[in-house]
Length: 258
Ligand SMILES: [Zn+2]
Ligand SMILES: [Zn+2]
Image (cartoon, rainbow, N blue to C red; front, side):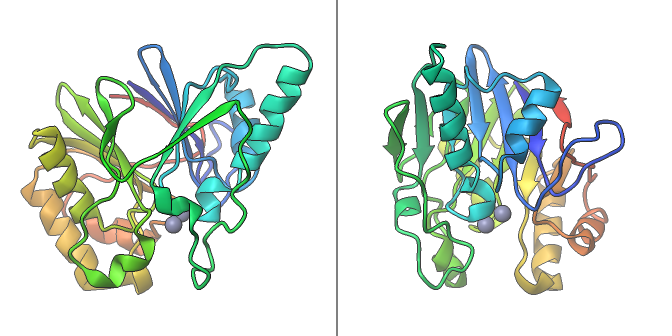
């Protein structure tokens, strides 16, 4: 499986790609090409073009949750596909997988995308609270059981998990369900105990040191060999986590093979 960061908050001089406070990954596994989140603007489309990644043959779009920094670019992607198909190039139907509550944004959630576009028939929308396999080895977790009730506002939050020969690769949007909850649920659903890597946003509200410490201790206990915190994960969180596990840099254009 190959994961390419199409857009992230961070950019670097090796690529000169756009950065924005948003997230989008392109995940290639066998003959399927999965777009995990669509960023905020069309930056992920421009970066994909610069990277030579063709988005017209994407087979699946997975949305981690309904925040604008993960779904804002969906309308731009639809416009691109309609433009391509209007000039006569065939566009395959893309299956869109997300939690059903993504369509019911909470008014009080200021980041919730209240205007998720009406998707045309190039998109086959498939909403599920249950875990669902996207490929033989990539699973959409659906609704993640959350013990901490304060996190209830983000019930549409989900993640992908890839079962590699070395263990699980957890791919998260913002980890609003809590990273430990996500990892434990991923282990339970896949029946695999080893975690090979974690990549994605790790959001800690108001930077609670105790929460970060609990995550660090958990990752250490689980012997996670590589963590790629990005997007909404701030520097202080990364520095604290680095006391427990190896922390890797993430930026638009980074490509990793698991
Ligand atoms: Zn986010
Ligand atoms: Zn979010």
